[in-house]
Each structure stands twice: as structure tokens, then as C-alpha cells.
Image 1 (cartoon, rainbow, N blue to C red):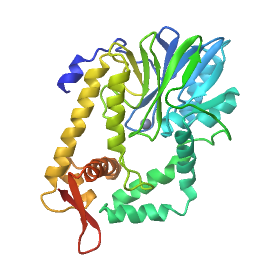
Image 2 (image 1 turned 135 degrees about the vertical axis):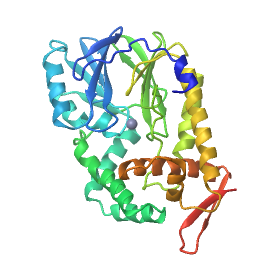
Image 3 (image 1 turned 135 degrees about the horizontal axis):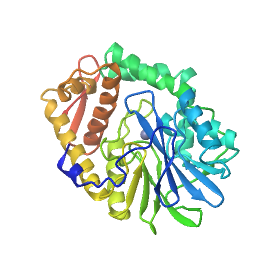
Length: 345
Ligand SMILES: [Zn+2]
């Protein structure tokens, strides 16, 4: 645990059992749903909205999550129906049950436009011809067959972790204000972890619903995706963290999508920014000779990684490489086999 983590304050140190909503702030319920992979869980929030509740994020599309929702809808919320569904970003633990829940509750889906479109894009990868181009991209980057297969499995498997989105949605964008139950929630968006991830800030009550952009214990995954191999998600992510530092009051209660609610946001933002600075230095230092992006991964991670961990580590490493390429801190040149290798500038 790092020094800054010790400075964080955890006002609700015990997480609720999956499927059992508890009050975490005035007029806000915290619902935790378990996930069938090591991330373990996702935090959903229900925000008082007049006679009912606005739902923030939906959980992954599996039988357990649907069953938890059924019990929540028929139990703790009975008599106060959901009013609308707000989804922060396209990752399946957030958008997975959006289509199902919007139809089940007959409510509108509210989402940033890029996140709605990105969900649609990833859902079609299960049968899309461009998946072959992804395979070529992974091979050109130096990923071995097992890690490539894990990446492709992730790209294709997205479809089954999500449900068909409603054919239309209501767009939210940075600068909008959502009025929920008489309270003003400013919409902030940030890139890097997802292209246009939505966050909600109730400035009057110092409540910040951060989704995955800032988490207490995990450094949010920031990865390059195959449809945009030259993308700069790390640049976007760091710009978003800097913007949050200038925008969100430090005494705000941060309600994140994973781990526990916390206070002292600024310390955590500083820690995440410093973490990525150190990772950039480590990536550059690993390239004593020109390397394929995937060849950098084992030099950064001492422990052996399975194919899935390698695929995540690869996406993150490429994000650091692209960040430094754009800023002239690394250069790329083709090797004898035509594949691009990188080294410090
Ligand atoms: Zn996410």
C-alpha cells in the first residue's frame, strides 16, 4: 500500500452483501453486485429521484446479477420504482444489463454518446470481419499465440456479457446538469479508461460519483484497443485526472464503481498521476535495445502472467509506449521483419 493510500478516509468501511442495497449518503443507495472474475464486484448506485430512484450502472449480464436485480426491484425498492437508467461507460460490468433493465423497468437509458456507440461496436465484434485485423495487430505487436487468443476471446466475448441496447437513448455530455430529486448533478466526462466515461458531481452536497475513473485501491485500466492502435488513452486519462483535480472539491465523498467509498480525492489523483509517471520511466528503461511492445511486458512484470493478465498488461504497456511516442520521449522504427520496434528517443 502506498503512502497516499494511508491518507484516504473510508467512511463506510464495510461493503454491503451482493444484492442488498444500503444507504451510503442522503438519498443514495449503494448496491453491490458480484462479478465472475477477479475484479470481484461492481458498485451500483440508486439516487433518489422524486417518487423513485435513478439507477447508475447496471452490472454484468449473467444469471446472478439478474436475480439480484429481481430481488431488489421486488424488495427494497417496492413501491418506489426506477425512474431512469444512467450508464457511465461501455465496459460490460457497467452497461451489461442496461438493455435488459431499461426494458424490464420501462425506463429511459441515459448515456454519453461515445459510450453508447462503443457498446454497439464491441457487441458486433462477435461476428465482425475486422476481428482478423485485430489478430494481425496483436501479432505485429509481438504477442504470443496464447495472449493473442486471450485478447481475441475478450474482444469476441463482450457480446455475451452484455444485452441488446435500447434502439434509442438520451445523450449526456460534459457540462450538462442532471436534476435528480431536486438535486443538481453536474455531468463530467473523462477519457483513458473508456472514451467518454460519465461522472456525476453534486457540488451542493459534496458527492462525487466517479465510476471507474478514480478508484481507491486499483489503478484503473488504461489500454490501447485494436480499432485505434495509435490511440493515446494515457494522455486522455492524465488530462482527465488533472481536470478532476481542478473541478471536484477535495472534501467530496467519492462513490466509485469498485472498492470502497472514500474522501481525500486529491491525494489519490496525485498518486495515480505519479504512478503513471513511474510506469513511463520503467517502460523506457526496459528498452535498452529496440523492442516490440509485447516484448516490454515481461521486463516490467517479474511474476509470470497468465494469458489474460498478459493481455491486460500488454494494453497498458502500449498505452505508455504511445504516450511517450506522441511526446517525443520514444521513437519507433521497423526491424528486419518489418515490425515496429520502440526505444527511448
Ligand atoms: Zn470500466
